[in-house]
Image (cartoon, rainbow, N blue to C red; front, side, top):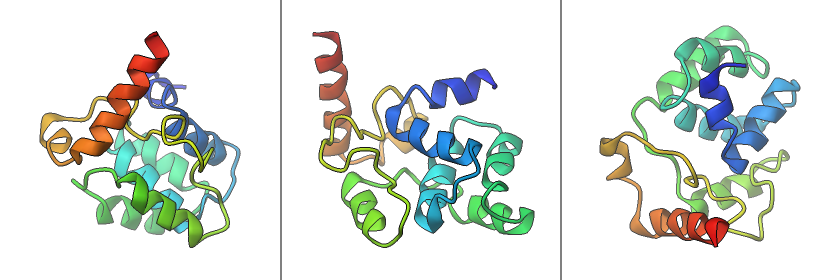
Length: 133
């Protein structure tokens, strides 16, 4: 496993998606979209493609990657909405925003960080503070 993938898996939310992909589970269209959106900032395109190909054909996987290029990660409300639209549970624990914080421990590029709503960044910050207390 690459260091980049290990770093991405340090986030509980992403560990859930990456682990499911590694095991060949179908994470659904919204799970793939979220995975590709976040992975583009942490994994090589080849590693992202390899993981997505466990759910899709190569062309479809490339299309997912292209469709999210440059997008910021979705807000929690959008993730909750996506979860309701598919069978795979995108959130490991839908009832705890701190445990399922998509932003905790992940440092996005400044231009993406600036597009993340302050509330979401605040949740990530609070989660890190709670973990160190």
